[in-house]
Image 1 (cartoon, helix red, strand yellow):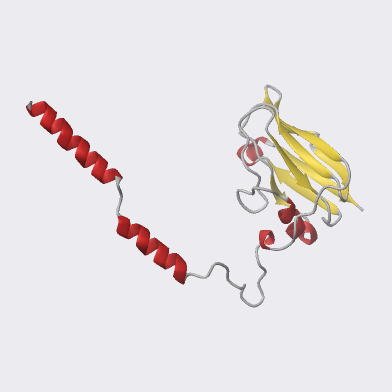
Image 2: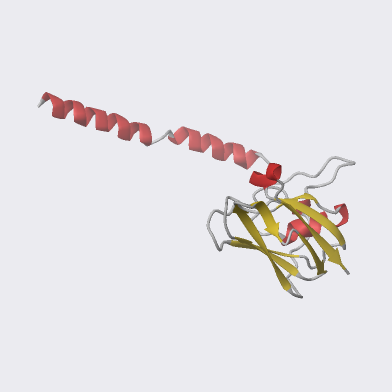
Length: 169
């Protein structure tokens, strides 16, 4: 009988602790109401690239790049790709994940539009992580300025997993 009482008391304490503090929710909500949702950049600075531009749909060909990690190393196939403005690129996870696409050397003139054309970013110019074979990520290069856009797989950058998209007019 004594064990049952301790078990019930322990369960009540655990459940009470899981209930949380309602006051903390109220305080957070009040703070959120008093904080502006967006701020204007200071004079002489630029807003983040993702904050500008409107996503533009693919109007040309969609090219495929495979994300591979195997006994031959970690790589994008093809690593370098030349496309026309308006084309799209679809990265497909094949093996050796996790993989992602992070534009670490974007052309400054095309950075804002590229950011607008990248869905579900996990950071600036950074795709989600892909863990399973056949997961894919497609980016439109419509309205993106012609030039070179260097990118890496963040988890495998030190292993040389990098690529470049060259956009032509």
